[in-house]
Length: 461
Image 1: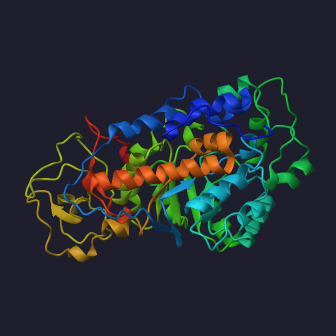
Image 2 (image 1 turned 30 degrees about the horizontal axis):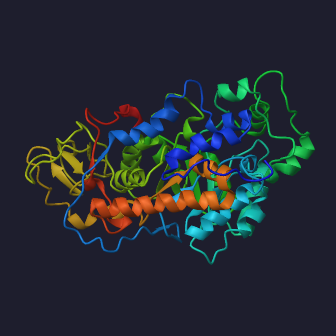
Image 3 (image 1 turned 135 degrees about the vertical axis):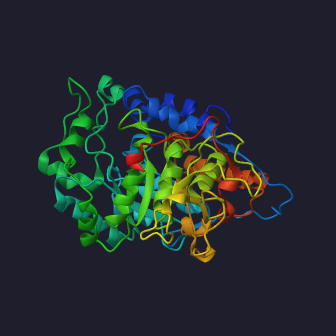
């Protein structure tokens, strides 16, 4: 593509962009960006999950000023919306990652640059100056060549990136039928800029494989499939930057990540591109939030398309616990048992003589006796985390494919339009919900899915 495409007609939401952008891309590249693993169950569920949760507005609230700003690991942003790490963005537009970075910086968002970027990480960093309301993190895959991974991490730290996001759900690339069918490979005029030396040393992967995807074969040759949680300690020995893990779906993995030293969790199923049939990121988010219990920030990636989606992620993530029973059954009087998620007390040691009789209510943030529904006298309310504490002051979403469609149609300006539209929708939705700031969002504004929320295996909680 020598010049950016233009939208064929005006658009009012990012939902409309895919249809306009895809015809402007070669079939194999469009297939790669649209692609999913196997039947695509997970990629579809990421989006439809948002239709299962409902919003419950609060009336007569002063929303003359609505504040969408937030703070994430020390970065002050104008919106809780970040750009997810995505490979080879110059396949969409000649400026690729550079255009995306400039757009993010101009609207006070943030960008997580992919290891598989087609622009050098140092060049992208220059487009995200520290003086702006912009976040710049670098995503890494831990390669079989640990020295190459260490070099990239150190280079990112030197370039001014403020955190490292390590992807933990890709010991191999998922079965992506579209890529195999179209023999997807890195276009000959592009290269993985951050792995250029490694490519030259090993020899560039051939294009036009007779069977399957050449890129999938190359990726598999790079990645270390023996990765364990010990890699977090190794990364911390390489850099002083915070380490977040991306690809967590289960509460036990979230706790393992924190035990290993992770400084943040990104709830994600890789956009439905790895193991098909996994739950949507939104559905597992409350369970992960309950397990994390405010110890580190949580971000969510997958299916976000509208400002109302951001509201639901913020509300579900700020207060732990997942719904049971669903519907409007949780709207009860103050003396009635709470129908939201209630988990057995996991305090070690437990402060009560009968821990099995206690539950933790995430609406009132107090322990209650299962028999009397009253807080035990030995547990002071001040020791219970507040919603703000649970999110450590911020929670955010990552968006992926909509950014690629905006980049395809308009380069930097197209990405800026996507981000600005999302922020405007979020601001309007907050006003209609009766919430004046992101920090005020919590589960009080959410109605869980009818028929009950996702029930995870007890062993994985």
